[in-house]
Image 1 (spheres, rainbow, N blue to C red):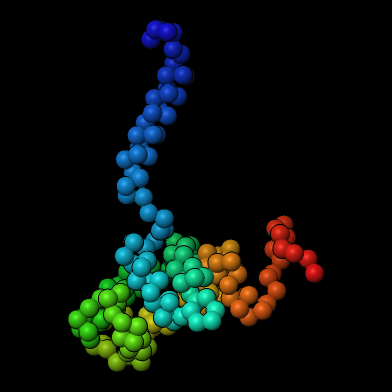
Image 2: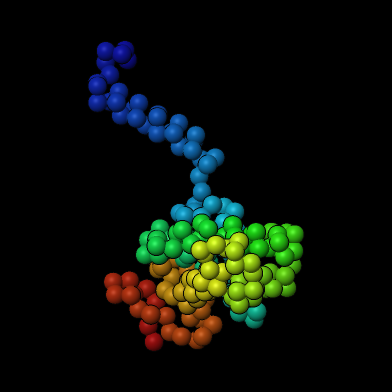
Length: 183
């Protein structure tokens, strides 16, 4: 087959396919499954949610995938809180370094708890937090964690209906998606 035998449509199609493959290969090293968070922010938020709803005899926020709920919602209905997370997470890390000389993820469980209690009660340097209220930021983290843990899995959290099973609740029927066992 010579160059003259290839139709313009086929040439454009093959060229586009080749460029698509090259583009995918080039981007794959930078691909992240996070919609809003960076990888580091996601790890931090996951650890915080694990503190707020820890696993015990039942799974906690980490197992329920609450960080995925928060990440998904921050580019959707909760987009108004993006700036709070962008400012609040570094301020939380700064508070950890000031209190213990380490980042949140480097702290022991009890130290993490101490930091979160300090935020909740406002026992941190308010000037360093500036316009961002540490109490409000903690409340935001707590509220979003609760929503992700107890809400419907279709919003990104409560993986495998963990909280419904823990509370021995019937899983809700979704019209058009009744895939649950019938009693």
